[in-house]
Length: 289
Image 1 (cartoon, rainbow, N blue to C red):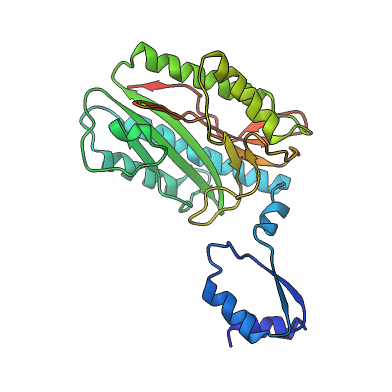
Image 2 (tube, rainbow, N blue to C red):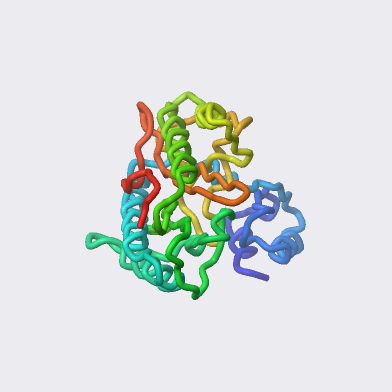
């Protein structure tokens, strides 16, 4: 008999209706079978992500911690951008990112994140997630970084694109469109509006430029443990009628991955009484090194 069985019996739950997370990363099929066998008179129901939906609205104290996580994410991104230049090894960029992830800021330290940093470089810049290699950066390439700042298990996501060498006019235009659409989505955030409303504001800007994004625009963030970088609840996407409330937090990720290029300039934010509060401060733009 496992300790969880004993605890349930101690609180008189042998005949209770027990909610379990059937899709939980750490609730295995074996764990479920053991509980069912140990508690034959209990009724088990699937309550997957119920707790996540309860915690989707953060308290002021939680948002304060997420602001700190955002400052760590900013420090990580600034360190990475400063490191990027022709001839630098990809793994060395990853190394300074990891150092800053743990060092945090002079005021507070960081922690390990829910996923590794993603360094999408060169041909891998057309994919949303990729690992680094030990290759050196060429004189001209594109680097898409997706990083995460973590403070007391609260995580804030941040992506930026960096052009090594002067970008083409077409790539610079794509970056400008991505930022314009991102800002439009952020400006549309208001309590009472829905996730779908925010996505629609973003999509309308893309449509004016003849572009579209089929994947979701963003997702709810907060407490996280590997391997999840989101709460698996509300998404900024067409058809999601989740109503925005003050205290919710999202990662808006208008990544555009086309046939031969990719751009990733994102913004994590908290919903406020009047709109939104950015949780990171690094400028939303294409960086050129």
